[in-house]
Length: 437
View 1 (spheres, rainbow, N blue to C red):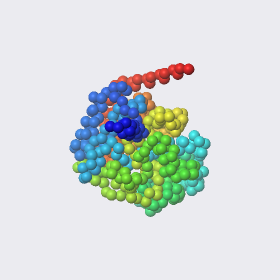
View 2: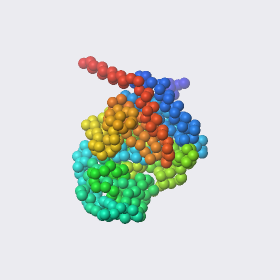
View 3: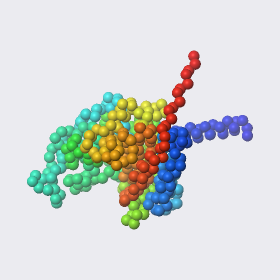
View 4: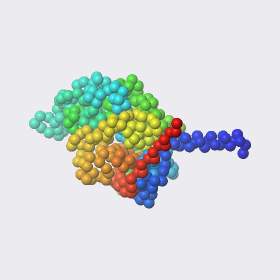
C-alpha cells in the first residue's frame, strides 16, 4: 500500500471512530464500573425469551454507569413481516419521552431570563387568560354527559404545565364530546395540519378537568409548554430543539419527523392481541403514525419526537451529569437538581413524586419499586421507558414499539434486572495530572 493510501485509510478509520463516539457514549467493561456481566446476561435472556414467545417484536436495551456504556443490546426484529432484525441504531417513536426534552428546553429559557415558572401561561398565549373547568352539575351526577362549566379560580402557570397540575387532560373527562368535536383528543398530533400554536389556542377555549394546582392530571400540558417555548424563544420548536439541544449533544437521529433516507431504520409498531401475542399495528394514527409522509405541521412537545438509544442516552447522561456532556453545558447543576425534586408533595402517588417533567422515587418501599431515593424517569405510550439514578450513577433505556401493550410485565422486570446487575460502586475518576510549568 502506498503511503498516500495508508494515510487515507487511517483518516477514514479515525473519522469513523469519531462519528461512532458522537452518536453514543464511550463503552467500558461492566466490571470496571461495578456491574456484573454475568448478571447483565439475565436481562438479555429475559428479553430474548419474550421475543421468542412472540410477546414483543423487537427491543433495544442500553445501560450506562459512570458515563460508560456497559450494555447495549438489540433483540428480535424491527419488522417481523419483512424479517428485518432489530438494529441498535433503530429509530423509535418515543411519544411521552418527548416531555423530558421539552422540559429541558423550558428550563434553558428560564436560565436565560426569558420566562419564570411563576409566569401565567397567558403572558405568552393570551387565549389562556381566562380558562374554564368542567364539573358535575350542582346537586346531581355527571351521568348522561351532563356537567356544568365554571371559571378557573386562577390562571394556569408555567409550573402547572411542567408538573401536570394545570387541570388539562387529553380530552377524556366530562367534556370529552367537546374535545372530540374540536378534533383535540388524545396525545397523538402528528396527523394534524395546523401548528401547535393554533391547536393550543383552540384548546384554551375548552373546559379543563380540574382547577389549576389541585390535581395531577396527565394531558396536553407539555404541548402547551411547547407553544410557550415557541413564543418565548421566537422560533419554532423543531428549530429550538435542533439548535439548542440535539446539535450541541450530537443527537444526530432525533427529530419530530423522519427524513426519507432514514425510513428503513424506523421500527415497526405492533399491538398486543387478546391471545397474548402481537400483530402489526394499523397504518397512520397512533399505529405506524404520520412521521414520514404526514403533514409535518404540528410539533408536539408532549409526544411527537423520534430518537435512538444512543441519542436519548446522551440526553439522559447530560441530565445525570448535572446539565453537561462532553464539555457542552445546557443547564446549571442546581437547575437539574430543581427539576428532579418532588414538586407535588403527596399529590402524585404513594412513595413517588413528580418534578418538572419527571416521575421521582421518594420512598422505594412505599412505592414498591426497586431503586434509589431521587431516581427519576418516565415512559411512552409505545412502551419504552428510561431510568436515571444519580446515587448509582446509572442511566438505563428500554426501547420498543408496542401499543397497546396489553398485560405485558416487561417494564417491571427490566427495572429489577438492571438494578440486580449492580454489585459494587463506581470507582472514582482518576485525579487530573498536575501541569508542569
